[in-house]
Structure formats: structure tokens, C-alpha cells
Length: 79
Image (tube, rainbow, N blue to C red):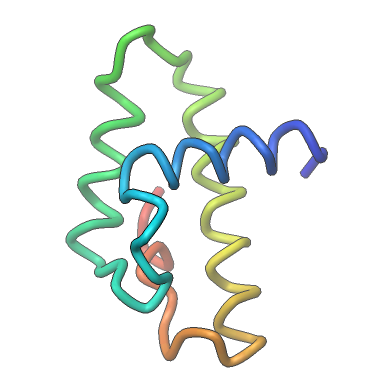
């Protein structure tokens, strides 16, 4: 992922969940709602852009799991 994509995704996550929300408080249901937000938001994202950004989100949360910042990746099954 490029730095621009990472920054965009970080801003999207912060905008959706709120800056004060700890990573460990993001649930699988919240991850699914975030996916729906990506697919229905205005301005619209192309399906490819939404998929690319969701891949980046999955990787960010996978890395947080590897670093023991969270116990499980809530985005693991989100495509």
C-alpha cells in the first residue's frame, strides 16, 4: 500500500469510528458497517477503490494483531 492510501484509509477509519475509539473497540459488526459505509458513501467510490481500501484496512488490523495491540482482526472476513 502506498503512503497516500494508508493516510486515506487512516482518515476514513478515524472519520467513521471517531478519533477516540481504540482499535480494540472495533468489532466485526463495526467492520461490516464500515464496509457498507465504503460501498454506499457519497461521493461514491468505485468498487475497485473500495476493495483496495478494504484490503489496506484488513492489513492494518492484521498488523495490529501481530503486534499484540488487539486480540483479533475484526476485518478478517470483510471483503
